[in-house]
Image (cartoon, rainbow, N blue to C red):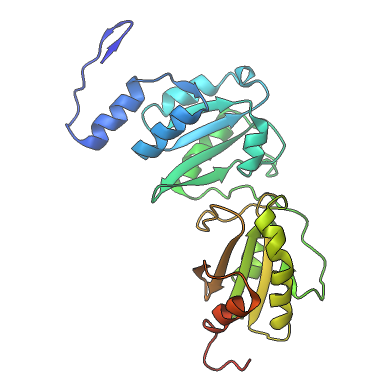
Length: 264
């Protein structure tokens, strides 16, 4: 590999991972603009990516220091696309950062928690990167307000009550519709989903729920690739639904996952 200041020679073990890490370390700038090219490199190499977002990232003077420290371990990027950051689950407080790791080819994002009272500085961003890499950072949860108790047969789930509602061990089935307000297919499904909620309104082992996936954070292990996405949570396990979207088919699906002791 050639650079302006001469020739570089690889001196490590000739393994795919070793060579990939060396190329990612020496073949690209320390900090790249967040773009499709670097996203693809990260995805293909499975080397994590961190994106720092601000209106003007050039004012964050410590990024070069952290990029040097993590050279070859992750792709360090910066962006002023604040709308993209919020779409990925960040707050609207900037600067902030999102760490992207890969699991089975899918991005898993850890989002800087702007509500934890910590300043966005060198030491705290260094700790964020370390904890995100180790899987112990508590990611920011974008969330609408937790709704007031209601008699509505369809339970509204938001980011802040997702675990409480969806992983309720007292329920056999929690069937969740992940939707976007602008989605035409979601609008078509809405009255059908309400009717399904009515079908199970008196069943204390079933919850029919919905969450606006554009306004609320969703756990990394829940895969929502399009709208609407329908997933039943059965004793904590995820059972995606891809059948007909009519009340009869949806009801049969729910019933098939109920315990034998339940009476409909």
